[in-house]
Image (cartoon, rainbow, N blue to C red; front, side, top):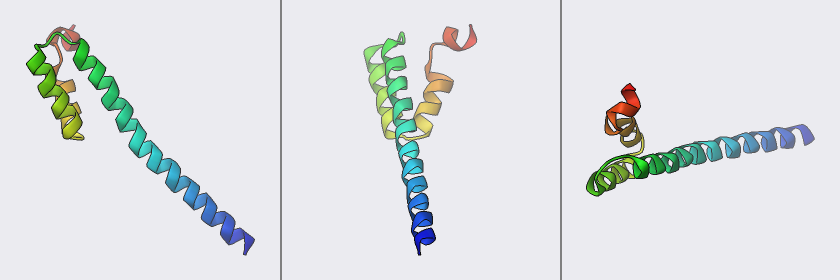
Length: 77
């Protein structure tokens, strides 16, 4: 009976850790992207649009900003 309880606790621990990683890693990425957008040479309107896209479109927003939204000299030297 003790072994089963230990296995259940280990499984619960792994589930909690994976859940936290899945929540906080993207959150930290969004925060970093927010600072990148704020410091980029864009108009205020462009910054607001990119911030909305990054925060409301979970995967595609950040990916699009990193691929197309940044200044070209940052990406292409």
